Image 1 (cartoon, rainbow, N blue to C red):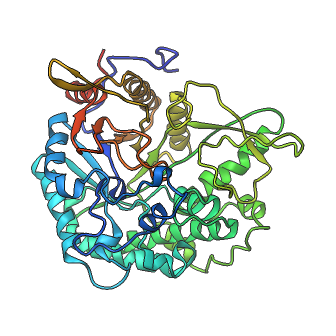
Image 2: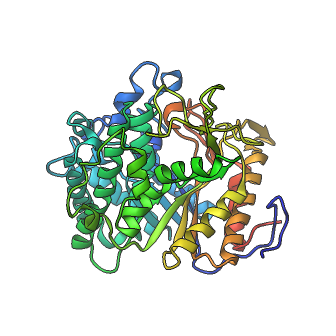
Image 3: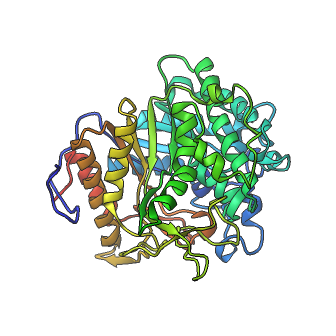
Length: 477
């Protein structure tokens, strides 16, 4: 049994050589330049311009202006000592309508970015899809349309041919759970639909897109590329007599509906039964599961908080504290009779509970189920209401809560490794404050502050702490 402080506030824990310390971002959240150099509109351009969908009417039109400031942003990464950078490629920059020939300006931008990373000794980890689907494909049904999966494979091939061996880890999708359930089920994310059957069709077509993309990349990327997918797997705490049944249902929709086809070559029978009133699953064609189950070199794990569930009694007011914006739909098709209870604090600005034990539990559980599969924490971090101060003429952000959050979660990751988990790295979310999807610019996750009026960057205390962790390869005192 791993020893340490019960609150996960340990220090001095050393990480092995080769463990990749880095940070993560996403294209729509930081790039801006939404209508420059041939980029086409994405579903998030459309969604963010739809009144009532994003807080304050915010859009990603400018975001952090990373498209124009990428060189100084890379210099900042180098100053912090980042060993890896997980970024995403905007499909509409590469194919403005999601199909057809490549947009040279888009490819050239990412090639400059990747070359800049390599020149600074930073390992590029590329995500092909972080939610910015070309709007033209959504007009044809988006992820409810099987053809989108094949279009995605063509896009992957184009990018793979251009960037090739320069990318250390090719990640197909970021959090397909969000793309499918929040985009097509709950209405909280673009494109904002509220249809359980469509959400489940999107689940399958995203899984299929992953498999087809890996196959396409394998054909065109020389050398020995690493292939990955990033999942936001849910850590589910059951409560009461009905808790185990509620946990089984949510685990099926949140976790096993992805892990099953990706790693085991099958959809869980209980999930299909639970969702029979939503869909007959006829969108799964013969041979699909073989296409989806591609060999993975590493599984990306995003973790922020836990959920606590039990079955709803049908009489009392149903608790719905699942951590996502309530727009009227549900991200849990076939399980509206499950309720999500308020969890003990403390909480981040997102209202998410802080529970580093959940990260340790998740990593250990995955290792026990898939012992041969290496893992990487591809997102972990916290939003807090930071304030900038000026001290001795220098701008500072004393984000003690975020620093504490990261210390505790790095401790959790280290404890998982001590229990045998093959964990290859940790990408802190996020490098900088950015457009937080439906919450606009109201939530700050960055270890670097962005002034949205001037776009100036300010290194927060958490970034300085992280830089010291990387330098020491151990959690600082």
